[in-house]
Image (cartoon, rainbow over all chains, first blue to last red; front, side, top):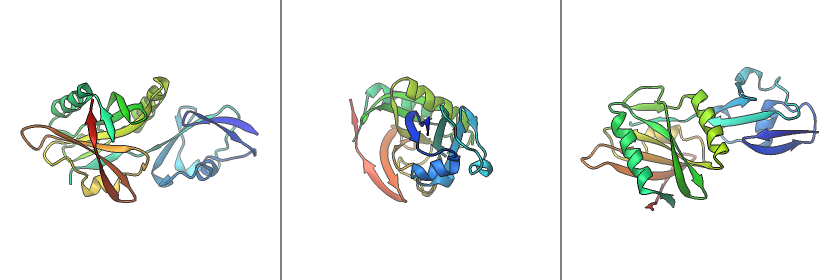
Length: 71
Length: 131
């Protein structure tokens, strides 16, 4: 079991070896392909979401791409 | 309904005007449905027809918002030459269903601002109450 911060909120992971990809699924993030992830203040490449395992006291943030246009 | 102080409305218009000819963008943060603070962000597209937040700055600002005890209520951007309504691109790129999308228009003599909720391509106009 580990305790992490997700977007500033405490979250308990009941199992060890939870990856970034699994955490995104656990949190039911809509439009998950359009979020950027920072783990402890560093960007995580999408290619390593499944191999990046969270550990106790990690701080992870998901943010949606923000953009648009006039037309 | 989004409650926005007159001063922040003025600041939105000021940001849009000083950013011309480019679109400008940023976040509005507050508590509940009341906006208490505006955060200007960089439009990395540097275009009069498009905007994108700088992801690094975006994460930094979101942490600042959190530190201030606030939450993100809306993103905003300007339309220098078109009305204050979501374009097809705005709708297509509105991925966060939990926030409001505020658009400032400088298309007419007087600036205009409107707020929308956008989810799964569906747009709902949201009243702005100036406080």
